[in-house]
Length: 203
Image (cartoon, rainbow, N blue to C red; front, side, top):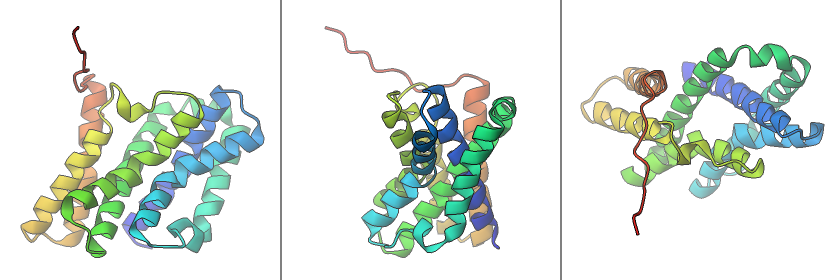
């Protein structure tokens, strides 16, 4: 198993936990929590694959994704209080997840001949759309639309990959540098409470 696939599995599992926690906070039933966990984990990748015409989508060709999502939901329901105490760990894995999903989406789009700006958007979609669907279904303002540096970190990481690839760096080194840059940007932004300025229109 290659490193990106391993992180992809980890990201899927943690995103399923993230979705289930959000559903639990909204007091949804077991079915509702499972659905929210599912769309959080695979929503971005599904949209990406459908837009790229790569069907059936990735999680339908690899049953491991399905079982990882089910495991994430069950772990959250069974050990919810313990999971809540691991917020910092989950935050780190969530950050790793968006970093890996960004590069997976970017590389997949580039391999299919998509122009660079749109390939970056495919990387971004892979990373954040699941969270947008989760928050929308749970009647919350999606995280990427306010305060925290989230989508911006993914875009910055995608640009790092493109630059290093253009300079001829080894592919694995490009991937590691990209994941590292997204994680670093996100951690610094949260640690020092850095956010993009809000738009305020004056009458």
